[in-house]
Length: 214
Image 1 (cartoon, one colour):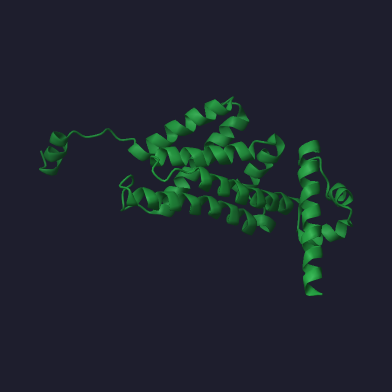
Image 2: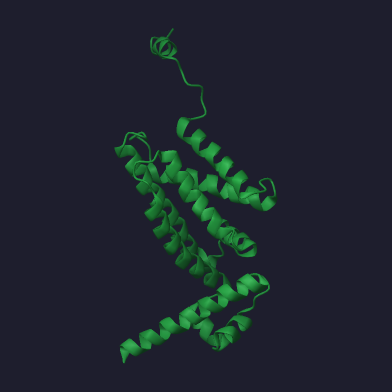
């Protein structure tokens, strides 16, 4: 009996998610009402609220499900021996391509991830942490291979790269970056600058003089 009830709940949730994917794609996120989602899913409006507190929560749940698939795909494509910059570019571009598949969806998701409503803060935080955890895993591998310093705080470093991704995404939506290639080139430059540093590289002689107080 419990098994049947759980199956029914999963089927209802799947119907809501499928309706959301179809309607968000056809009408756009803003133009899709909870009533229209309920009608498309073949359930009552009240039933939707027993699964999701708001339309934004449906959006984030959809994103979370899709990110699971995207992250699995990234793990398959990641070459363990690739340079750290190449790995980070693969991750950030994979996320960018997913988010911008539906422009209206991506814009709303960007707004929700950067400025979450109180009712969806926990969901937004889960998605953000999944980004950071994937970054930390790659950073640890980089440390083991001598590609990254061992004295850095990995979560803070992950936040830095997450910020680069959000900056590129925002630039694409505002029209400063026009194509996927523009985004790729911009991210590649920002990643390389982050990894090599922004201060001038000192010559050994200059470093010795500074250490000696000269």
